[in-house]
Image (cartoon, rainbow, N blue to C red; front, side, top):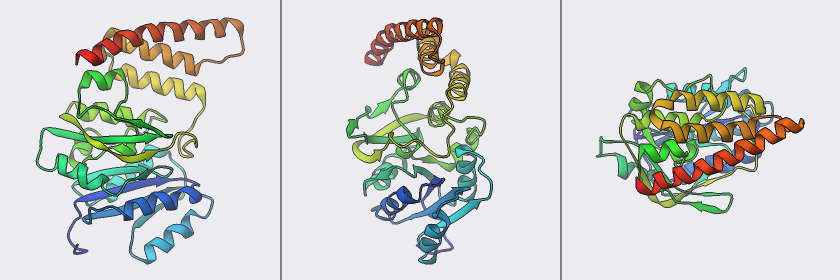
Length: 279
C-alpha cells in the first residue's frame, strides 16, 4: 500500500498500563491476512513501559501511536484514535484481547458491498467459551442483551461513527453496547459465522473505572437512553440487573432488595428469551 493512499481499515487499540498484554494484541493485528490496513495505538497516560514498547514498533513502521499525557478515559482515547484514522472502516481492539488472522478479511467481505449493513460482528471466545451470535442480529435482540460483545468484535464505517455522534465520553462502562445500539438505528447488524476474536474478562480494563456506584449510574443512563425502543420488559429487566450488581451488600434490607431485583430480572429474562426466539 502506498503511504500516501488511505488504507481500507484503520485498527485502533486503546491502552493504559498493559505493557505485558499489549504486545499480544498488536501482534494479532500485524498477523491479519488483510494487508490494506493501518494500526493506531492510543496510550491513555500509561506509567509503565508502554511508551518504550510502542516506540520499538514505530521504528519498524508497524504502527502509529498517540500518547495522552493525562488519562481521560477509554472513550476519549477511542475518539482520539478515530480522529487519526484514515481508513474507510474502523475496528477497535482492547489491549487484553486478540484476533484470529482472518478477522478483518472476513468482516470487510461482509460489509464492503452492503450499504444496508452498519456493523459487522463475529463469533468469539469468551474465557474459553464460544459465543456465537446469529448471522443477522435484530434490533430487538440487541436491546435484550449485547450479543455482539465488546469493541474488539466489531467493524463499521468511520462515516457511520461520525454521523452517530462518536463515542460518548461521559460513559465509563457499557460503551460498546451504547454504540452498537446507535449503529443499529442506521442499518443491519451482520455477524461473521466464524470464531475470529479472543475476548478476556478476567483482567479488568485499566482505562475504565470499576466503582459499583459509577457503574450502576452509567448503566442506567444507557438503558434510559433507549427505553422507548426496548420496551417495558427489556428495560425493567436491565434495571433490576443493574440494581443487583450496583447496590451495596452490607445492610440486610439492601441484601433483600438485591435478591428481589435478581428474582424479578430472571423472570423478565424468560420474557426476553421468548422475544429472542420470536425475532
